Each structure stands twice: as structure tokens, then as C-alpha cells.
Amino acid sequence: MTAAPERTAVAPRIGVLALQGDVREHIEALDALGIGGAEVRTLAQLDEVDGLIMPGGESTTIARLLLIFGMHEPLRDRIAAGMPVWGTCAGAILLAERAPDLDRPTLGLMDVLAERNAYGRQVDSFEVDLDIAGLDGGPVRAVFIRAPRLAEPGPGVEVLARLEDGSIAACRQGRVLATAFHPELTTDGRLHAYFLAMTEEALAAARASR
Amino acid sequence: MTTNGNMADGSGERGETATWRVKAGLAQMLKGGVIMDVVTVEHARIAEEAGAVAVMALERVPSDIRAAGGVARMSHVALVEEICNSVTIPVMAKARIGHFVEAQILEAIGVDYIDESEVLTPADEAHHINKHPFRVPFVCGCRDLGEALRRIAEGAAMIRTKGEAGTGNIVEAVRHMRAVHDGIRRIGAMRDDELATYAKELGAPLELVREVKEQGRLPVVNFSAGGVATPADAALMMQLGADGVFVGSGIFKSEEPAKMAAAIVRAVTHYADPAVLAEVSRGIGEPMRGRSAASLPAEEQLAVRGN
Image 1 (cartoon, each protein chain N blue to C red):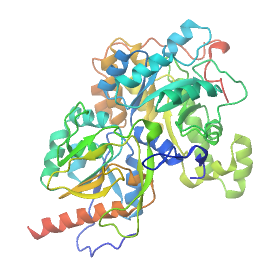
Image 2 (tube, rainbow over the protein chains, first blue to last red):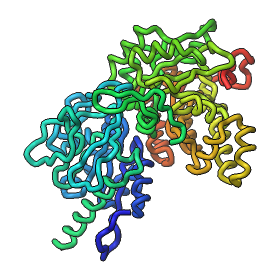
Image 3 (cartoon, one colour):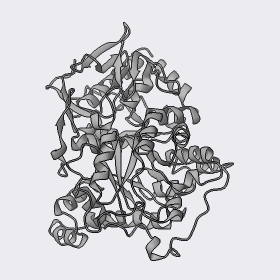
Image 4 (cartoon, each protein chain N blue to C red):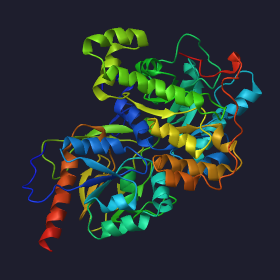
């Protein structure tokens, strides 16, 4: 458990986009933080959450399902209007403004290039210790599975971690967080706590402006 | 994870490759998705366009393997390579049960997952491939919990229930999925001191039986295979607890493969929503012609291969 800030109102509700991918792993990670997570498959469920995780999976599949089920635009609008979002691997691809080898539009909410399968086929998938800016307690074990290479960050993008070859492993632009790897495949909940804090801040800001 | 396949661990230029987490992890990313059998590049593109999470590259779909008879082997290397180069989603390919050299070849080509499959003619009647030393992950079939855990002990990083491939008949898939979950529930209800005897009954390592009790599920992802022919079949398997679905003959032996493929993908996402299932079941043409699994002569039953 991370030290949660004083919660005067209800805890933030965090959803996991559940069209396809490793949804359960994210929900279990949120459970471990004591806040629980909700599957988001429909627009009605999207309305119920304060922050959204877009999980790992196949970006081609998820991109299609977002369009087919009419969620692409409403989701983009929700995020553009300030809902915190975190994409892991496929989720990161879908958040990127540029993903030239994806044959469907992304949500285009982070000024970064996502190059799919840039590290090779499955036998080249890897895990490595990675220091993340803003995360105390030493490196995380970062698991890259047929991962995208994130590159060419725009001026508004804060790079939080890079691999040795210089490619971006984690970055943030305002309330949009992207990791090319899968924190949900480990029991290290620090990045989930980081995203929870992002969502709490957004909620507090919304309350203050009311 | 106690089922550590660390023998295959290697150091890549960027980090550690072929760890258990990386092998089992790819299957975790495929969850909630549909893996489709394809026999040509054209099929593979149709599958990808329909939203498949992966394709299984093979020369004949199971119903044609049945019709052709003879010995069914690993597909031609050139075909698998062509398919690997034609899509951006993961590509799987089948090796015969126990044929570790076919597996070595598929690994050398660079397939993303190997299916050690009863759909091909077994190469070894007593032994499965020792899958731990491979860098590429494996998926294996099972009919019940014991078989699933034996395969995991041998290094399978993903499991699928066998069903009866190429029949378009869901009955065996249902039987096998229920059997796996029945085993898991039994373990959940047992005292710790009863696990060793049950492990013996299952023919599975005690360590894995303990892990199932702790987690309340298999230690790896479990898809359904063998018999899915409609969106309703796919949703049935999901409601019975499958993490995702393999569709073999069911797509390219149907009247309108592209529509059937897209409909099954949607059905797997909204497997518990009958309104969506009704919607996607419209206008998709005739499913493949099915056959009764029970009427198959013993030598044509595939699920009994490998135990």
C-alpha cells in the first residue's frame, strides 16, 4: 500500500479498458492498492470512472474494437477533457499521435511516435531493470513483450525512463501516461500508485474549480 | 512463479530474454482475443483485418487434415515465413507432439508461439517436447486439469483445451473446459494435506497443484479450441471460463469468412452481453458444416492424442 493522501471525498474510480488484453492483471494490481478497478467495455461504464488504464494486448485488435463499438471518439474526448489515462504497451501505441504501422487511427493524445514491434519478434521480448523518474525505491523490473519503441517526444512530453539504446520506455504528457512495458506483469505496484496519484490530483483539481 | 523455465533464459542486447514471465506474458496479452487458423497469406490478412490477436499458420485447417488423412506434419517453412512476413500480429505454428526438431525449426524461423498439437500426427507416443530449453513459448492442448498441469510442468506457457478439432461441434470443447474448471474448484475446496494425494491422482506435480490452490486458477492462460463455429460458440466458451478462443476450420470453412471472423472477435469481447451477441450473429452466412464428434471412428479422434 502506498500512503494515500487524505481522502475527503470518495476514492477515485479507476477503470481498465476491457475490449481485449491483460485486463485482469491491471485490476489485480489496483486491488492490491486497495481501491479496486472496474472493467470498461461500454460508454456507460466509461462514464463511471475517473481514470482509465488501457492495458496490454494487440493494438490492431483494440483499435478496431474501439471504432466498431463507437468508443473511439467518446474516449478521445473524455481524455482530451482531462480524464487521466495510462496506456501500457498496446495502450501506449493507441495513445500516441504517430503510429505509422498501425492500420487504424490512434487516439492521438500524446505527442510521441510509437513504432510497433520495434524490438523484434517474441523471442526478442525481454525484461530489464529500469529507473523511472519520480519513482522512489529503486528500479522497476520492466517487461517488454513485442513492445513498441517510443520516440520523437514533442516539447510537452516528459520522458520518465529510457532504455540503454535511448528509446523511451515511459513518458508523460499532462494527464496522459505511457509505458512501453507491462508493470501489471509484476507485483511492483508503484506505477499503479503513481497513476492513482495522478487521478487523485485530477479529481482534486476538478473539485477546486467547481 | 514456481513453474520457472529459466533454462532458456538468455541475455539479449537490451535485457534478459526468454524468461518465464516473457513467455507466459505474451499469452496474457492475447486474452479476450481470437486466434485464427490460416493457410495462406490472404487468409492471414483477412484474419488480421477482422481483429484476430494472432494467427496459426498451417497448410490445412483441421477439417481438411481429417479429409486428407495420412501423416500430418509441421507446415512448410516457406509458408510459415510468408505468413510471418505478411501480418503484424503474432504468428503461431504447429509442431507434432514430441517432435522437438520441428519445434527447433519453427523457433529458428522466428514464430512467436509454437502449438505442440494433437491435430498433427504425433511423433512420440510417450513423451511431449521438453519445452523449457526453448526460447520461443509453447501452447499445448488438454482435456482436464491433470493434462494441463503436466504440460505446464514440461514448460508450456499457455494452455488450450483440446475440443475436437475440425468438427465444428462444440461438445468436446465444453467437456474439456468444464473438466479443467471442475478440477480447479475441487482443489480450492481441499485441505492442504489432501493435495498430495490429489496431485497423484491427477498425475501432476504437487507444486503446481499448490499453485492452483493459491491462485484459484491455472498458472498460465487457458484458451478454448476445437469446435468453435459461431459467435455463440465462442461466447459460450468465454462464459465457461476460457481466457480467449482459437478458431480453426470455423472461419475459413464458413460461407463468409471475413464476416464470421469479425463477428467472432466481437462476440469474444462482449461474451456476456446477449444483445451484442444477437447483433453480431446477424448476416454472417452459413457456419461450417459440422459433424458429430461421437460418431468419429476412434482413429479419427484427435483429442485422445497425447496425454
